[in-house]
Every structure is written in structure tokens, then in C-alpha cells.
Amino acid sequence: MIIISPLIRLCLKIISIVLFIVTLAAAYGGKCNPEYMTVPSVLVLALPYLAIATLITGIAWLLSGRLIMAAAAAGTLFLGWGTLKDVTPLAFSKSPEDETRTFRLMTFNSLHLADTTKADAPGNRAIKFLTESGADIICLQELVNFEDPNEIHHWSRGLIDSLYAAYPYRASGFANAHDLKVLSKYPVNAVQIKCDSQEDGAYWGKRRRWALFEVDIKGLKLPIINFHMTSYELTDTEREVVTEIRGVSTAKKSYEEFRYEIFPKLGEAFRTRAKNVQEMISTTADITPLIACGDFNDVPGSWSYRLMREAGFQDAYPETSLGPTNTFNQFLFLFHIDQIFYRGQHLKALKTKRHRINTSDHYPIEATFEILP
View (cartoon, helix red, strand yellow):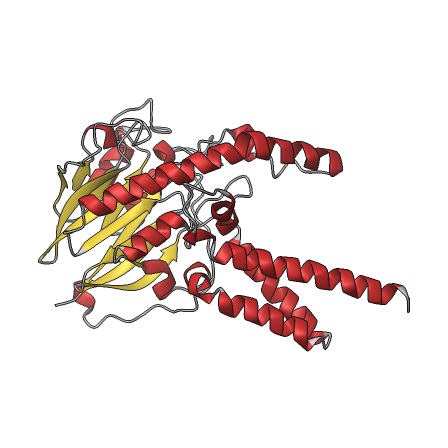
């Protein structure tokens, strides 16, 4: 043990240092344009887990009396805090100045109101959840037609009528953004807006990735962008690569699948999504106040996320929440990819909540806002 112990300690130090370096690379990976490099963007996806591993490693070194290694862990988290504060925030909900000026907005990639975990359950859990949610505004993605029994799981007239009763105002995105919907307790309409690249189907990933709506709520005509940015387009088989690792042979196979099949798809998605976001930002640059929410398909700290922040948008989650969260819930890809951004001096985020209903591969996320004078 006298001989082996120092060797083990040396190996642990090397592993720890590698962890710290990779964590820092992930924290700054979102500053690298995916047009030129894909690896940094991939690392950003793992940042919450790398940060937690770094914190645990630092505590372990501290308890073992290795102060230099503990300080290295603390330094890593300090140097990466500019990104980590959005990924693993240390904030709490706020109280409104005037309760009558508050409203709740929810975004949910509903997956056509399917039920991925209880397909045989009677009724439709997603519709029941929406009807009873109490949110004032609900932005839905991946839903084409409430009236189509072939699209909606266990469709019934009674279920749809109950939803309509709870949300008497509804709007749908124009043309090829028709899978973006808004349910509202207040008057809402879709706003026709022209993009410079709107006719370029390849640019948009074959369809429009966002739609603009306007809700007349409590004396404020509030513009809201409902977006569904380009996904990674992975098949179920490709998504299962991580869960299939059972040993050296399966790990090697998974690595080969990731390198030759998954990695190129990730790079293409990062690049296309950046174009989606840039076009959305430039088209709505003069609109304020403005909420932009939906399935962003990218995480806090990413290149596309930074584009939104640099355009003056705030993120409701890190301003009102404590610790990391995930909104995607399948295949061990537990990423926070549904976002609620906002800008304008008349809006203030008070609270954010992630709901746990598991009918879709996304969890709904909800923010409470206050309309300021």
C-alpha cells in the first residue's frame, strides 16, 4: 500500500486535472462558432454534469487535505462562472410589486399531444394537464391540428371542448410554421412578418422555425415568439447509443456510431440552428417588449444561446431558479433545451417552474412575469 497509494493518488490527480480542463473547455465552448468547430458545442451540452463532477471532486480533495487540488477545482468553477451562472444558477423566485399585474406563460413541446409513457391510459393526459394548468398563455410546439383525431392521442370532442373552454383564444403560426400554437385566456393573434430568407427552405431546415404572436394582456399588447429551432434529427437507434454501453466492446461500437453517424448530425444542427436564431433576432430587432420561448433545442451557454443574450434577451430561468434542470427527458439526454427569453423594461421574471408530466419527450416549463408600469 505504501508503494501503490502514491501511484493511485497521482492517477487521481491526473484524472482530476483532465476533468478541470474539460470543464473549462465546456464553459467557454459556446464562444466558438459551430461553423468552424463542432467539438466545443458538444462539450457545452455536458457542462452541468462536468461542473457537478468538478464540485464533488474538489470537495473530495478538500476532505483529504489536498488543498492545492481543491483550490484548482474552485478556480475552475470560478473561471467558468460566467457561463455556469446560467447553467446552474444560484437565484430564487421574487415577489411581485403588484399581484394583479402578473401572468403565467408556459412553453411545451407537446409531441402532437401523444403519451410516450402511458399509451394505454384512458383519455389524454396532456390535454388534461393543459386544461388544468392555470397558465394564462401556453406556447405549444409540434402540434398541427387540435381537430384531427389522427394526430392527437385518444382524441375526443369532450377533451377538446374542455381545452377550448379553458383557453377561448387560440392562434396558429402562418404557412410552414403551422405546428406552432398559442393558447390564451386573453385575445391573441398571429402576426405576419417577412424574413429575408423566408423562401429558402434549406436555410430554414425545410420549414419556418418560429412564429410571432401578439397577446392583449392586462393593458399591454405583448409580442411573443414561439419557436421550435432545428433539432439534431437523431433516430431512436442513434439516441440509444449511450444507454447501450455495457462494456468495452459496446463502448467501442458506440464510439464508432457517435463519430461517424451522430457527430456529423450534431454539427449540422448547431450550424443550422445558429442561422435560425440569427434570422429571428434580426427580423425582430426593433420589437420590445418581447418574449421568445419554446423548444430551443440548445442549452444555456451554447453559441445560439449567447446570440440571444447578446441581442438583449434575458433568460427567466437563471434569474429565478436554484441549480440546473433538464427539459428533455429521454435516452439519458437530460438537457435543458426549452427556454423562456424576454427583453424590455416592462417585463420582470418572478418565478420559473418545470412541470413533471411525461407524456412528451419534453417537460413543460413555465415562467411567471410581472408587467411593470
